[in-house]
Amino acid sequence: MGKILKLAVFLAVISGLSGLMLSYVNDLTAPIIEQQQIAAVQESLSVLYGEGETFEPVDAELPEETAITSIYSVNKDGAVAGYVYQCAVQGYGDEVTFMVGINTDGTYQGFVPINYSGETSGFGSRIADSEFTSQFDASSIDDGVDTLSGATITSGAVVDGVNEAVEHFNANYR
Image (cartoon, rainbow, N blue to C red):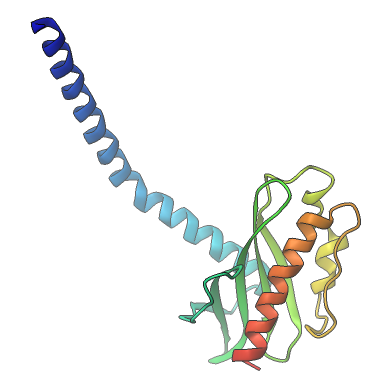
């Protein structure tokens, strides 16, 4: 009985020390990971609008069940030039995150897929191809976006997310 107690105490001490070390490493790496995530978002925003613009997070009330995860206003020369919606939808294989830019005149600025690594190569991953992304090149948000044949689950989910962004834009900024 004494040997079992000693082993249990030894295991508890080792587990406690392991937990403390993991906590310490997490505290060290959390700010670095957060900075990398912010840099990735800034890079995606810059891909949509380019140089000379500033991006500010918009504090907007969103419905509970929405694909929209964040909204950024695009400021150019002191005026709002448009809005960027970051969305997350369930694709065929995994969650797909993307950004869509909408100009204040009601045209798309562009589409940038951020994470679609869980999608089947050659099918769901086609949302990053020009066949899909070219639909967002300065076209009107009233024209709608088509799904991709052969990748209807993923592209359909992305289109649903884009439609939610358009509805939010129309209700709040148009």
